[in-house]
Image (cartoon, rainbow, N blue to C red; front, top):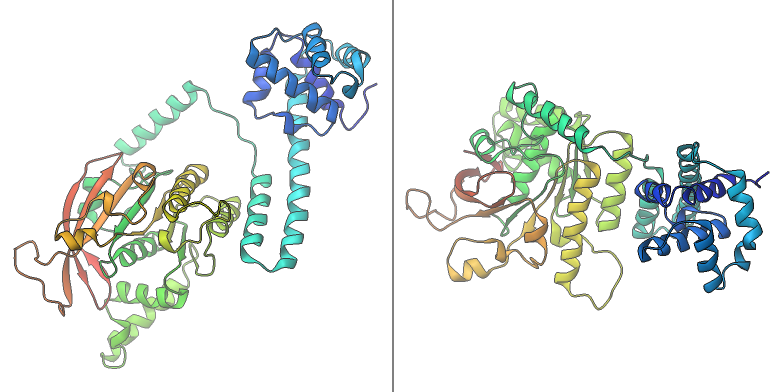
Length: 431
């Protein structure tokens, strides 16, 4: 009999030697690697088999024995008697799928144990970044294994999705900015998209993102908002003003009915079960860990981060430039959108070059743009020009200003400019 707990590992390795590499390839596709094995002998053998596969060598017992001998690893695994024993105990690949699942399940259990121990150690440090990394490790370890869909299954699912969209049963995309004409023309944001609304301070990027997030949450969508510029209480004040049309700064001098409308809006937002605000998760690791943790609890409809340049980059290469670190975060947010199958909206700052040149902004004006232009599925540039759409100069103290919103990149639809109005006292956008 094969010794436990490595018997499933030994049987899986034996299967890979029985069909000239077919089972080896299937195991690799399922996610098996040398790190999946707890036993040193099975780990060594699987690693050598992988190297043999890359070299185009036959995947069988005689060649494996030769390769182990060349590497002086034969004695480390127990010699040829051990190899003969495991192959004799598993003469066919009939139970390959069972052994595969057992190996992956055991790897997951070990990862959960290690992640739990890491989290316990991290809690004692009281360092938010260290704790965030530990939470991320737990989330990754706890994530369920997914089976890759066949091409036919993907095509069938997309056909059904398109039929549902055509018939109006489901919307195109899952997130809009609450601007009907804009959303209809440029398209709602789809799951897995990484969208970057960018502007200079005062051009309304926070107001646009926050207002859209609140509207989505009030419509029943699950929204995670990470506010790195304003605390949760300030964000709720803004949201109540946007919803009620009453500025929080005017509460001491408005009519009693208007004041009542404002506080009713504040209570309504505060009781929204699908809206979550996080104003203390400031690092990339902490944000990603939080999102992964929430994803385990259920589907997320949109993640919004305000804003990219305020996110603390991961600890790592101290020689990396600020642009390289922002680029790493941009790539991480795009990967996160695909991982959780939800839009990730990350506001960003524009540099002063467009202002200095007295021109419309463009993607290259993104601060530390780096890979943002390549990673983003959409880039929205907000700009408050000197003149409005009618050519009349905009007054510095005007309550309502015209914002030029330029869709400079859109992988799934058209690009181009549009005009919006922003009511400064309530920070509310309208078309």
